[in-house]
Amino acid sequence: MLPGGINNEPGGYTFERLSAESLYQLGVLYTAVYGFKRASGFYNRKYSTAYTGQQYIGYIAYDNSGVPVAYYGVVPCFLQSGAEVILAAQSVDTMVHPAHRGKGLLAEVYGLTLALCKAEGFKVLFGFPNQDFYPILKGKFGWEEVGVLHRFEVPVPMAGLAGVCSGIPLVRKALKPYRKYVLQKLAVSLNGVAFEGAADGFAWVYRSDAYLSYKKYSGTTVVAVGGAQAWLKVGDGLVVGDIRLNGNSFESVLQGLKILAAKLGLRKIHFHCSEGAELHKLFARHYPPLPSFHVLFKGLGAGFNLGNARFTFADIDIF
Image (tube, rainbow, N blue to C red; front, side, top):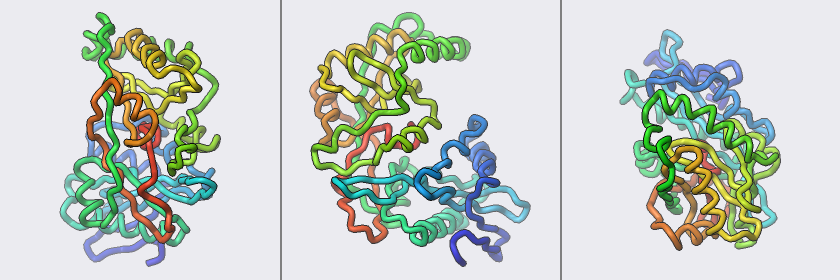
């Protein structure tokens, strides 16, 4: 079967390439798998990657009544090393309906998506799988592990009563508009920040203006902290995607982030980064690096220096 086609299997399942018309089916499947709904339009924004020349790289499996029961997909982007820029894709959404597991559906949608990536000229796939998908991606599907991101957790001891009570649903709901207001007051007119490790000889996700505009799908904000810019979102604490220091003292910027987190009623700051990157070294002076996401690659004949890539949390689709 050619990538992009539909395949009717004897077991009653149909496999179809993701499209603009079928994006809503990802929300249907997500609710069946995880028990709650994504925000309206989330997948439309997440898969809006026309800036790369590629969109809707994934396959959905349907049962014989037309209900989506499995999906595997990737999100196109570019990786850069020196002057070389290549078409790549990040492994993102992997879902199998609880009532249809153990039937080989994940292998089917994965295989179809991989064939599509090869046919469309992708050079490298990469991902940061969770603990459930990691052994499958590495063991069964043969992806290469090239590192582990480290997580830094910064306590915020001055978060006050709002921080203590933020776990209460009504308090959390009341804090949401307040937090949005505070972040907007500090926001700068940037969609994201550039990667600072280029001069160190690393490969990285190419953060063009188009890419940074695309990354707004998850509701992140860039704020001014002193003379630096910090790319943030509010989650289980203040989640830092990346920081551009612009020559400022890391310690002063970190102190500014602590003050901001306290003002928002957040008791922790989280940051994930590849070892060897400058921000990793700076955070590690003050806080222990804790293993977090495994970094896996699947080469599709590019000859790209996979082991030289460096990432921050901003590069992961969940930021």
